[in-house]
Structures are given as structure tokens and as C-alpha cells.
Amino acid sequence: MRLLLVEDDERVAAALVAVLGRHGFQVRHARSGHEALDALVPDGNDPYRVVLLDLGLPDRDGFEVCSRIRAGSGVPVIMVTARADIRSRIHGLNLGADDYVTKPYDMGELLARIHAVARRGAAPAAVAAPAPDVVPQQRGPLDSRGIRIDRERRRVSVDGRDVPLTRKEFDLLALLAQSPGVVYRREQIFSEVWRSGWEGNGRTLEVHIGSLRTKLALPGLVEAVRGVGYRLIPECPAADPAAAPVAAPAVAPAAAEAPQARAEH
Image 1 (cartoon, helix red, strand yellow):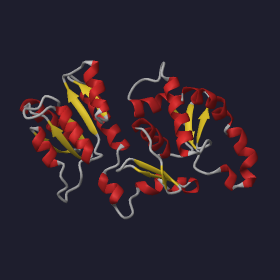
Image 2 (tube, rainbow, N blue to C red; image 1 turned 90 degrees about the horizontal axis):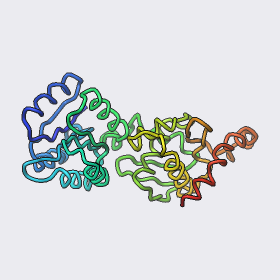
Image 3 (cartoon, rainbow, N blue to C red; image 1 turned 180 degrees about the vertical axis):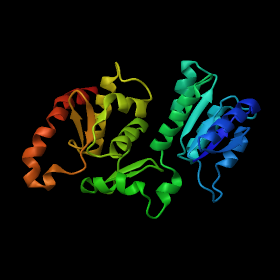
Image 4 (cartoon, one colour; image 1 turned 30 degrees about the horizontal axis):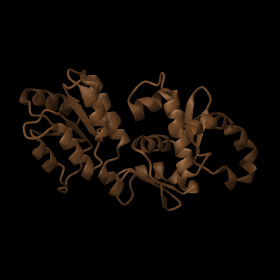
């Protein structure tokens, strides 16, 4: 996996390059914002799967670099910085960063976060390839619903109609679509999509689920499993009359939560 490290501190960079190399990463070290942006220009090599971005760069602020990266690329960005204040965290995430890690950090945690954002953000080459392995897993099971998920462009369509989603709505749908029919625990969803704990945030998840159902015009697409979490239903129940008696009870938990989600809109 190729990784771009944007860090002006040579000592910190050398240590990171050594550790990441031992874990199988191919690391390119950029020492400035300008060098980082140049490195992301397509050159025929495999694309970078993750960018580790320091904020204190010599030529420009890391926030500006993140904004420029996000304007032209969907590569996941993890901000790795000593700025621990909440305003910087919020600003970085609002600019499009996929994660925010403060120094000093545990190397094991950083590696876990790198792998997590790499899983959520498909590499551009994997999306553009003629027959990628990941497309049948994310698109094939949803054919009966007419749903298409373009991870590179972060676009969703239903029966050819583009559906505008917020960043979190897209990430939530993409996560559930990775394994249609599999129940994702609430804790797991918040860890993957919001990168925070679930406690006290249940209403947030309900609202986003309700918004997805409304925007996609598919009320039965996401099913609530009471006391556990949510799963995406890949097949349309109406397509198979014989399955109707079984499908009806299955959506009952979702119906119980729907009024709460609608109340938030």
C-alpha cells in the first residue's frame, strides 16, 4: 500500500518511515505542502491509499493543503498534528479530513486508523479498473434496488437518478453496502463513520438513517435490528411475492424507529 507522509520534521518523518516500512507500506516523504500536492499529481504509478498530513508545514498551513487535496482527489487524509484543541479538530474534519490524530500518539493506534480509512476509501485505480474485485461486492447485490455507489466521486444514484448525500450519509451507506444483509452494530457504525463512541449519540444515527431512507426513496432499504444495529436489505421484498410473509416482520423494528427519525427532519 502506497502512503504519502507530509511532515517537515526530519526526525519524526524518519521514525515513521521506518515503522511504516516494516508494516508493508511504501512511503513517500513530502517535506512541504507544495511537494505534497505535486506528489498527488497522477504519474502512472499506483495511487496513494492514504495521506498522513502534518499541519505545521514551512510553506503553507496544513488546513490549506487538505482543502486543496480534497478539491481534486478522494484519497483519504489523516491529519497528524500537535494541535489538540477541539476547534482545530472540527475545522480539519469539516475541510474533508477523514481522521484527526494528535501527537504524541500510539503507533499501534495510528496503524489501525490508517487501515480503517484505507478500507473506507477505495483507491482510485480500483474504481477505474475494468473489472475490479470490489465493484461486484458493493454494486452487484444492490442491482435489484437500482443503486449505484461511486466511491471515487462520492456519488450515489438510484435508477439513474443522482441522489445528493451529505458526507456522513454517504459514508454510512457505503459502510452498510460493503456487506448487504450483515448487521452492523451501532458501536461499529460510529467507530467507522463518526470515529467516536456511540454512547449518547443514538439520535444522530437514527436521523441519518431516516434521511437516507427519504433521500433514496427506499424506506425498506435499511432495516433496524432492535437492540443491535442496522443492516442493508439488498433485495426488494416486492420482487418476490413468495417472500412477502417473511419480509414483513423483518422490517418491523425499522418501522418502530422511523417516527423518531422523521421527527428530527
